Image (cartoon, rainbow over all chains, first blue to last red; front, top):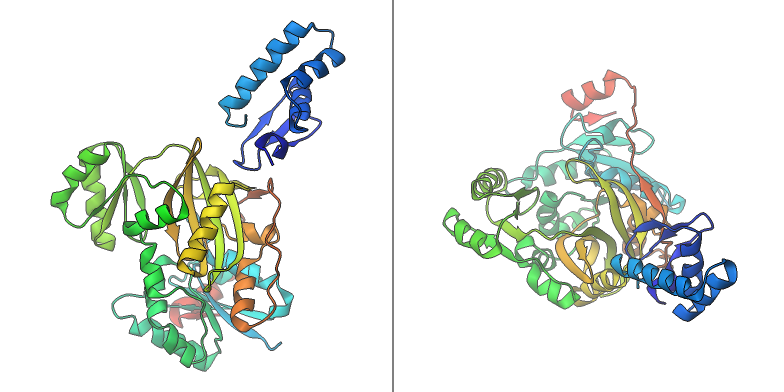
Length: 78
Length: 346
């Protein structure tokens, strides 16, 4: 199981990593991205999910997903 | 089954909690064991003596020093006058004595479940490099000091700051050479040589409590991360985790050395690297955390050594929180008086 799919995520944005014991708070956009990536889908799917849910362009969504990926990397998850 | 009288040491429950209360609580939670807990204390003020819902009767013991004859004689006295079927020693300084006398105690009807002396030595603070390698973990740069003349060169090699550790207890972070010498002197005065100098590794403190069956098999493992620690470095809050590399290392340790009894791995995770800091050859003070998430290791240990069925389940939930708290008890001076004058209470 990948680290992403192992994350425990609740509707209020609380994210727990059972491997390290670290916990984070994610906003609604972050939660949506985590849910998509946690299902084993890729960044393109996450971009599509954002554009389906919010009134943003693909370019904006791509930047947001890329930025979120960097944040996940910074905490050792992705 | 008949009542089982189990002696448990490590009854301090103040700012530096011992493992005894958690071990005793765990045993009580297995109703099939029918345990009576006999506390083995070193001081009449050890809180466990007064927690009558955890400890049924307590004895003040002599320190396990020298040849240990006085300590063993006291155990035999307890056996003869009160009864004692099993002992779980929970303090590092007791273990060499118990291991040395395990057969003699068993011949007198007092059972234990302990590693061999060889196993005990192999996880010593001064011998961790081989264990770390076989467990797939890294080891901070470590130097074993047996005389003051070697300190300067060792610190030069490791660099400052450095951890200065006693062979049994205590570890200090030293930022200057003067501090290294000072702490070295204190540790030698209290515990003798060797003193361990170790590289400071920054990262997340991760720990595992485990139980080996003595044949290479695992009777249970629980991994945790310490979230909040006290000024003495003792866990105050924690969370269960499933860190694959750390849990695999614990299983490898059990399998490689056929470890018999409880142990704790203290690790430091820094990015993808996991460093082995220490192996404690007994239950840690937080071992009730494992019981709380369904892995009752003290109970499993007794069941295994008594030939009773041992739960096969090894899984536990990650994300469970451990919260230690202060609590007050108001009780009679009578217990303290008996502990002081008679060496036993109640």
